[in-house]
Image (cartoon, rainbow, N blue to C red; front, side, top):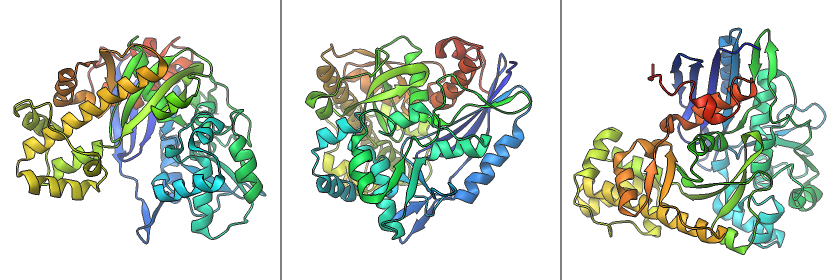
Length: 446
């Protein structure tokens, strides 16, 4: 097998979709970045533009030349509903942000199963992640087809089907959606009994090392969950702890291979879940918040501002470790939050500083909760990836709170680089993600 090029196709939850080209021994470049043209229905829920997605996948396939591996990845919440007779998609295709939190809370209450047990039954996937069961129930309400028989599969597996014409399930995505695991009793009884749905796995499972050939010397890695790929870059540092950042941010703790963490009341209260990783790895993670959107909203409140300009404004503020925002403020709509904050302070630099400091404090609190729940010592040094890894103001604020953040290579491009590294590992060019990343580490961005 001769591989000299990887096309990393990555869907971000709020940042659209990018295609990066990694050339072994030479470097990488971004080929394009596009916004996803969501369709909003009555300002209630979002729809996936499926024609647009099919055209995009066809375009990427057409760009593959001999020696190319296409490595697609996306967030871990969206599913498609298929007609069981011919496995064609039954509209609409919802985005995970369509599901109101109140709907999810009511559905969990309706089940009569406590949140902790719900999480345990779903393979220790936190209910707030809105996985298959929640998405499917909301789909039935929106589509007004309450008794329609369905097959429900991850959108990622459907994307693999479109790229390769091969049906199968990515094991990492299945686990992280709370499906296809031995403890998915909740889906197989309560949801399935009521609505005659077949939830994944309905197709064969792809192996952890599988590459799907779609042409002479052209392969596809089954589309997988973007977060584990990003966190594989954290793990490449050798540090057991990490912070992953972006619109969402949270805590990462690498654990022994296998089932990962043992769920209990302490891990649930700390928001920890067990995440499958590439190459049969495991990690314990906790979502801290989606406050990156608030930071971006503050940057835009008075017009366009670069991340570098915003960081300079923050670094010019007198350090004040007490500056921060309340949970009520953080729960506001980002644009409304930004307008009210600037109106109240009149100082954009101070407002940005308070946001940065709030994020740093939330990270410290998250690390402490996770360490206590896992019964280990809280770390003072962690790896960091994502947008905040390139933000000197965030790094300084973390250090103010006793956390030294180590920035690995490709930290700001962790998902794309992780996808490329995993492709090289599967192709046999590297034994580990860390080894694969070294193939690009001394090459500057093209």
